[in-house]
Length: 96
Image (cartoon, rainbow, N blue to C red; front, side):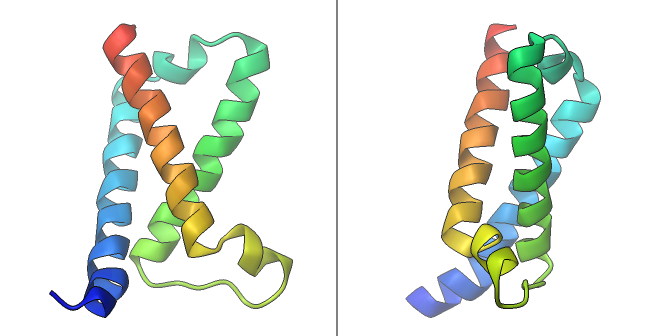
């Protein structure tokens, strides 16, 4: 398969599916984040908002304008944040 097609079609689709699955999991089991101590809850909620938001944003094809927002919402950083948050939520769902 063409590597460019993977970047332009399949990775955004995977981000959209992962964001949707995480959103459903967190709606189904809200104690995943609400059961954390306050020192962990606030950073994880902020990370989750950013990761899910960028996952949905890249999944539907939106891009940020140039500037500081473009760096914060850039694709490599988005994937790392979304993967890290997904691993954290999955770990909490398995353990708790």
